[in-house]
Amino acid sequence: MIKQRREHSLETWLKPIDLIILKAFDRVPRELLWLTMERQGVPPKLIRLLRALHQNVKVQFEVDGTTKVIDSIIGVKQGDLLGPELFTFFMEAVMKTWRCATSSDYAPCIFRTKPDLELTGRSATHRGGEEFAVRDSEYADDTAVVFASRADVAQMTPRLLHHFDRWGMEVHVGSASNTTSKSEVLFCAAARASYASPKTYDGADLSDIRMPGGLFMPVVDSFKYLGSYLSRDCSDDIDVDNRIESAGKAFGALRKCLFSSRSISPAAKRCVYTGVILSILLYGCECWSLTEVLYDRLRLFHAQCMRVMARVSRKATWRRHITTEKLGMELGLHPIDYYISRRQLTWLGHVSRMDLNRLPRRMLSSWVNHKRPKGSPNMTYGRSVNKALGKFDIHGSWRTIVHDRDAWRHAMEPGSFTGQWTKRKRGPRSAYTAAPTPSTPFAETVALPSTQHHSTVPLALLPIIQHIT
Image 1 (cartoon, rainbow, N blue to C red):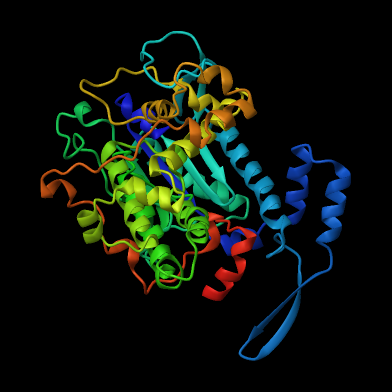
Image 2: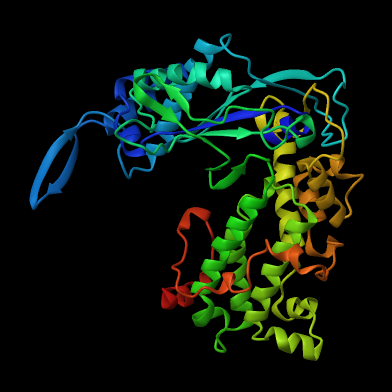
């Protein structure tokens, strides 16, 4: 969304809202929750069952050796599998009432869409299609509200805080006693050619958003939302570097005991590498707009990891003329381009088969009725997906076969991949100064990352992982 607006010379002010999660889950009024679920069409019998499950709930806690048991009369149950689901119903009601109350008070971000699955190359003055507005994005307690100008942010932020307070929610903002704010405002600039002074964004006010009572929200140039980094220039450089760093820490933690071990078979190394390391490395890659510079960073990391798993040093590869392709064949691994392209096309197929009334499907073939600036735009999502389609040689026919799930999967089998192991081009030393150093992926003192990436390991490898941990 923000990339599309930048491509069409429009600025975006994104305000991710960080709720104090413990208080958020614990402060949901239960009677209000049952009422909102009833309004959203949940069957009355199911609501009665949920109401019964939340009766006579006891909470036990210990403070300074003293144990206390009290009745739980508010909030969803912590640690319960139903907790996040019930909280999602509640947040949907909060944001739906926000949209109804402010629908005419500020200008939303407007897009147009057609069901033709046209990803790129559409003229800004293209006629027809359906117009729709994007005002916010929600995932559990992670909420982001989208504005088109700083004036709208300054005007609507106090009202937004008041709205959440009426529903019993507390937003984490900065104050005189708390100088840090987890809720921040991300300013996403338009294309550089749109400004007379690109360094100052034509004098844009990037100071903190001030509110009554001494409250404030800082304006930042990057923000981590749902595990991925969003930046002011809408590029994926920060997110890719962060993914490489996280995957490098995980690889380094397992290097001695697994990846460089003589007693572990290449097949076992491959399973752990594809199930754990690549899951961390490529988290969120479905939405990346990758330039060749970013591809080279990921290829370099992939090649370094394969050399470690094959127990071959860089010097040995030079002396014996061992190519990256030979290492990949020995380990049973594909080029990193294959894993990225397959994930991007899997997501493309999933979204393409959605109904047009769903927001992801609308955004897939959307455009903005605003003139583009002069010059070549940054890499866009549509061009990046077209590159992935070309690597599986399904450029012309993809709009037909994408609706057949089995045919789409067959088109992305390893035998259909036409990409090659790309040899890293040598250039001026300064061209690679921004790339991670070779020692980054192999730091051996860092613990494994958390399970938030939902990595999976084959059951046959569980004894190995248990031994490692």
